[in-house]
Length: 419
Image (tube, rainbow, N blue to C red; front, top):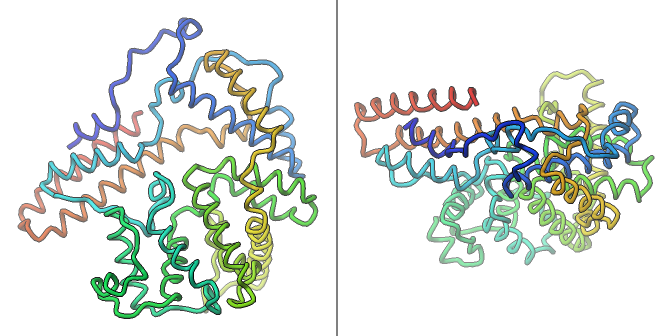
């Protein structure tokens, strides 16, 4: 098992080029693209910092982008891709090989509770699109997102969605025969909105990612003091910095919520209502304190949590209202991005800004290593679940496979840590 994971997780790398030869030999197109991406990210972060009135961030921004190129040896991560997180195709090859080894035909993927980078790796998931299309035909339903559906039907619907996601099929929510085939004799709009909200509630990382939270929170705090122009520019940079899967889902969601609000005369759901409802699922830090009903919490923390929620809701409201503009890149910024890419290419990937705290946080290769290890563990957990729940295996066979599984997991973890 470990040999399979080793082969798929760590494809054979070309021989290392001696350090003195880096300036003579051109790096690969893939490595060049990674270098360009890093430098563009760095540029965008510094332009974002310049828009925010925070002394600590402004101090970093003043030294972030050098006027002239700084020559350096490409990092191990840029040169060889050793620290790059596994792609969905690599992970699927791992699970396919592992499932053959253990005699299991199919490993299912999760729709609810999986990272957007996985669920939306190939663009908007058909299941999510199907829900939006169905709800778009019922926009006049009063309280479309405020009223609750029937919990038992939502649970069944979510299970159906998992099956359709794994089979890459759309939902046929208009078809009574299709619904009945899954045991759903009755289904209403609020059942679908319940499943729709559950998808975003169960995301392990919100659509507006943890890595950008510190900047988004500053925009929320300065929301009233920032001019509309600076506010818009800052959020345009945030959208440009999002992972493509997060950007795709965010754009579709904001567009859909704007459409819902356009029918507020009938459905009673104005943009401000929708912003308050979706704010907790779009924007949160990894250590946010959530107030549970009946929990003991002092009044100061409660007030802070309410104020925090209100300012974030104002930000989400602005995102919904201005979503079309926010996904456009200003011409001035486009020119800067093009110039950075040209400089990186001209200097064979060696054009790098002077190191700053911001760049260290955003480009830490250890984060990529952690992502790779977590991705591997998720797939190994899925495989273990299938082993333990396989009705065709005896208890003795399950124990034997479990031991092989855990041995492979430990070997893979050791190898990931060594790298």
